[in-house]
Image (cartoon, rainbow, N blue to C red; front, side, top):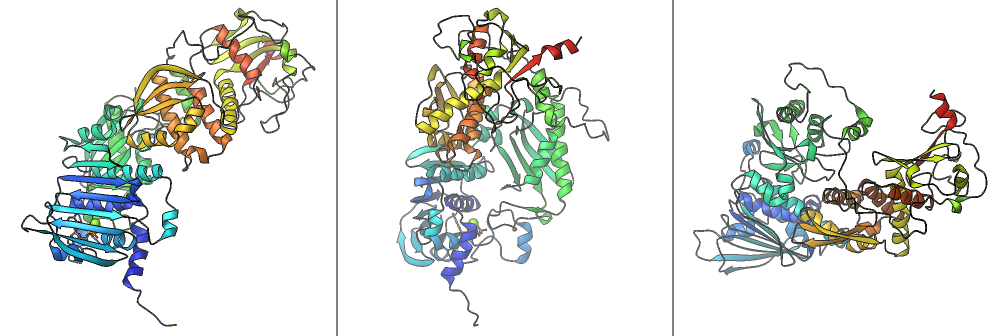
Length: 622
Ligand SMILES: Nc1ncnc2c1ncn2[C@@H]1O[C@H](COP(=O)(O)OP(=O)(O)OP(=O)(O)O)[C@@H](O)[C@H]1O
Ligand SMILES: [Mg+2]
C-alpha cells in the first residue's frame, strides 16, 4: 500500500461533513464570523430554507483582496496565531475551518471591503477551487452568498429534511447568536419575507422580548450569582408559567451558545417540586468563566464544551437558580436559606396528580356544550340500545379493590384484547331511562350514575380521550373532517420557529377540526377547534403548546406519522383541553358518546375509562 496525501478538495469535503451538517450550520458559521468581524448590523437572507441561497451581509471590518482569497484556505484564521492564544479564545471562530468547509460543498461568492480601501473585491469559490476574483464597488464589510448547498454531494442533499424543518434549524441558530449580542442589530429574511428585524436592544431582556415575545419575556426572574470560579447571569422562567414547550432553554458560556444536558439537569433540579413532571421551564443562563478552565474545541460545531471542574459548575447553576426561585417565594414554605438543609423529599411520579388535586377549579363557559347533539329525549338517559346478553361478573380487581367482584366491565384486561361488549352495558343499568338528576358530576372530573350492580364512575378526561381518538382516527385514516366549532378568535404568539410547524401541518390540522391560521411572523390565530375542545382563551393557549409538542414529538411532520399515533396524541390533547363539564345533560351526552365509541372501557393507551363500585364494595365500607 502506498500512502497518499488527500487532494485538498477531498479533505475539505470530509471536514465539511463535520462542520456543515445542514443549511443552518452555514448560517451559524457566517453569522459568527460577522460578529467576530465587529459588525453592528448583520442581515441574513435565505431562499428555500437555505437550499438555494444563504446570504449574510455585515458591516464589520471586511477583508483585504488577499485575505478574501486566503480565507478559503484551510486553517487560515486571523483569530489566533500561537498555541497560547488557544487558551484565551473569546471569539466564536478560531480554527480557520468554516469557510473552506463551506466552499467545498457549495458555490460561494464573497464581496468585501475594508474601511481604508477605496474599492472592494469579489471572489467566487466552488468545489474548493477559486473561480474568479475581481474588483467591485461594495459597502464596507463582508457579503457572503452561498448557493446550491451540497450540489456536489447529492447524498447529503437528499438527507435534508423538509423545508420547514430546515428553516426551523436556521431560526434556532439565528436565535442562539442573537441572544448573545443584544447590542448588534440582526435581521432574518426568508423567501423575501421578513422573519425577524431585531434592532440593537438596550438589554438582554429586550432582545428576548423581540425574539420570543412577551409570553416568554414577561415571565422571567433575574438570576445573578458569582463565585471565584464562575459568574452566572441571566433569567429563569417563573415556575407557574413553565410550559411543556421545549426550546427556550439556553446556556451560554463566554458568549457562546452551548448544549449541555448535564447543566440542564442542574436547572431542572432547582425546579424540583415547583413544577409538575413533564414540564420544562424557560431559562437563559450566561456563564462567564476563565477560558483556561474550559475546552471549546471538543466538537466540530463548537457547541459543546468541557469544563475543568464540571461538578462545581453544576452546583453553582443549581444553587443560583434555586436561590432566585426561593427568593421570589414561588416555593411556599420551602426553606432555601437554611445552611446544610437536607435534600428535600421527592414526591416523584404522583406529584403532578397531587398538584392537580390542589389546583383551583378552572372557570368555564356555561353556554358551550361540547357534545351537544340533537336528541329525541332531552334530559333522559336512554340505554335501550345497549340491552342484550347478561353481564358476566368481573373477575379482576378494579380501582375499588381486588375482590372477586372488583372491576366492573369484564375480564378482558387490556385494550388489545378488547372485545366489543357494548351489549353488556345495558344490563348494568336498572332503568331504561334515567332522569338526569341522578347523574352526579364530581369536580368536573368524574361522572357518577347508578348502575345495576352499584355505582358507575366515569373518568371524564379519559372518556373524552376515547371519543376524540375515534373521531380523529377516522378523519386521519379516511381523509374525513372532524366537525368544528368557531370561536371568538384567539391570537397566540408562538414564536417564528413554532409558527412554521403550524404551516407545515396546516392541512392535517384542518382535517382534524382545527382552524389555525398564521398571523404575522410569530403569531397564529385560532378561529376554530374540534367539537368538544374548550373555547376558553387560556385553554386554547395551553392547547397550542400541547399540539406543538404532539407535532414535534416525532422528528417528521405530522402526515408522516402513523394515523393511529396522530389520533392518539391529539386525543390526549383534546382530553386535557376539553371544556369544563357543567350540566347533567352534558354529562349524559358524554356517557352516550363514550358508550357509542369503539371501546368505552379503555382509552387508546389502555387506561380505564369507566369503573363500577359494586354494592358489595359499598357494603364493605360500613
Ligand atoms: N465576515 C467576515 N468579515 C471579516 N473577516 C472575515 C469574515 N468571515 C471570515 N473572515 C476572516 O476569514 C477567516 C476564516 O474564517 P473561518 O470562519 O473559516 O475561520 P475562523 O472564524 O477563524 O475559525 P472557525 O473555523 O472556528 O470558524 C477569519 O479568521 C477572518 O479573518
Ligand atoms: Mg469562523
